[in-house]
Amino acid sequence: MKTTCITNIIAFAVAILQINAQSTQVAEITSNIIQTDLSEVFSGATTTYSFPSIDTSELVDETTSEDEAAAASGLSLSGSVDAYYRVNFSGDFNNAPGTSFANLPGFSLGMANLILSQEGKKAGFTADIVVGPRGAEAVFGSEAPLNLVNQLYGYWNATDKLTFTLGNFNTFLGYEVISPTGNFNYSTSYMFSYGPFSHAGLKADIDLGNGFSFMAGVFNPTDFTDFNPLNEYVGGAQLGYDFGKGSLYLNSLFGANFFQVDLTGSVDISDKIYLGVNATSASNNFCGGALYLQVAATDTFKIGTRLEYFADKGIEVVGINEHVFDATLSANYSIGNLTIIPEFRVDLVSQDMFDDGNGGYRNSLASGLLAITYGF
Image (cartoon, rainbow, N blue to C red; front, side, top):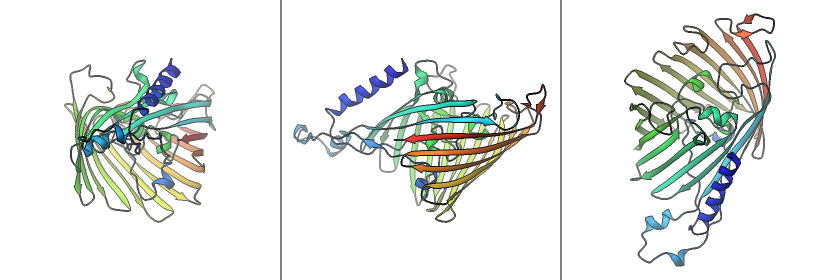
């Protein structure tokens, strides 16, 4: 059934292309990864392919406006696939870090990601479909068949400085993202895992000039992306500043009984060295901070680390008022659009929580994985 859904989507896209006008580049997928001058070096950015456009200039009425002509653009298709092998160097075979994704034992699947987009001068849309364990975990709040939908939104460029977006889009909080091609480390942080994944609602993005930007929106409760069963809403805001060699974003999410503030930043220290930072605090849930350091040894080989501290304030991932420190060392070796990621990770918890395989528990877990991602 999942294969049939994706086949039908592709067939529908091809049919639309036969009557659409000229193609355009894909709309940038909403992401909370900060893109800097070294984005192609460190983010695992992928190439997007556009379907060939058909010259329909003779079919356009003379009264057609420039905006209408620009809206008659082609569809673009992009996405990714990933898989991995994971092993523990200490404790029981089934132990795993208490984070999302990349936590299954042995040879395991990630997800297949198919993104259909169209970008016009005034408006556009994105339909993002996911299949596989990583995709299912990312859209855990949805039941089949809606659990195939990672993002589904349309946007309107009201002016050159103001854009409105309505639908379901990935979160603007945090440093990491759902797609593995957007992260340097294959495994994810605790802060990302227990923050929001996606929002459904309406947001306005404003270009304030001089590198500053602002976003404000109203959304369903976190991760209720298909509809609102609670008749409750949360607000969100983001203030950003791009200073050329890096960026800073101050993010917040707030409701009647909840508030989260989140800071993400990145800077190109040199042509070879990149530093990222994330700090967050969610009321009665958790708080923490992480540093991301990456070095480009060559154009195709990079190495980087994530150092994270996470304090559990009520979600009982590692126990209330307990904390965890995780250190992750990853390498990225690129062969065209394919990236090979060997990774070693250590999780140190303030209480014993990992099965030692002998009937007891220990407070640490050493694990490793070998992953591949392919973006197209």
